[in-house]
Image 1: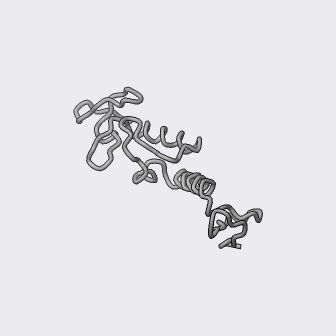
Image 2: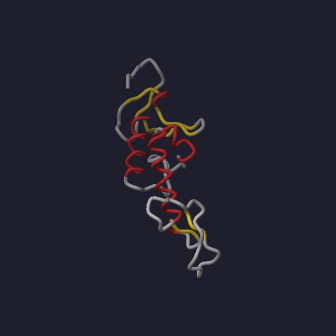
Image 3: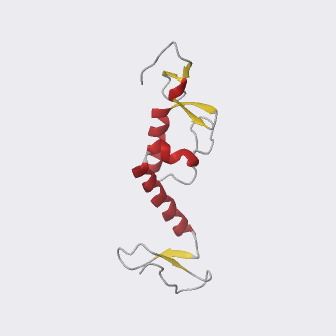
Length: 122
């Protein structure tokens, strides 16, 4: 980051560096006092460790999910989607993963007590 003291600026509340406003993370028109590199590093760490249930701004707990792909890029966003789907399937009693190796399909069940379902992929 190149800091220009002649431009509007503020301090990042994560790294404590003075950064220009254009480097500060925004949700809509609201500044969140976290610089773009810090928010990217924070989201990367959250996703890489599998903490994907509720991604929030580390400054104010605002929902970041709508802007997540722009923050972390396509590759990490796909990893986020896989983690999120894994959590959804593992906590849903009406769905499970197909037992066929490398299928990756989802098996829906008609009720919580059902023991059979049909994979929609294989």
